[in-house]
Amino acid sequence: MTVPEVLDLLGLAFLVLGSALCLAAGIGLLRFRDLLTRMHAATKPQVLGVLLVLLGVGLRTRSGLDVGVLVLVAVFQLLTIPAGVHMVGRAGFRTGQVAPADVHLGRRTHQEPPPS
Image (tube, rainbow, N blue to C red; front, top):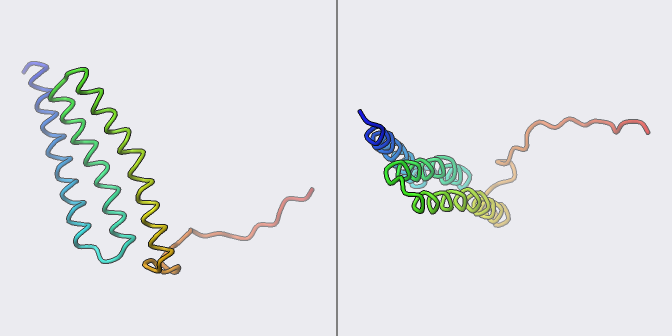
């Protein structure tokens, strides 16, 4: 096998894996019952799926300009999706969609300040 053939097969594998993750995220958005679990389904597998699809397309095209545009798309995905989901979660918390008891901040212990 030549190098372009190997890159095409690797790109195809990334495309299939990325599209499967995007499909799982879409099913999760439809099937999960509350806002927090839907937000999880909308971010984690969706972002990884989109990045894998972009990597697969980049491996298949191998053009400098196309790869540059794909890198820009990936960077903007990584910048905008977490900010958007944060705003959705914040709006859900403020409108009562998310109960304060559902938000777990972790275990905090009271510590005394160090002596001055």
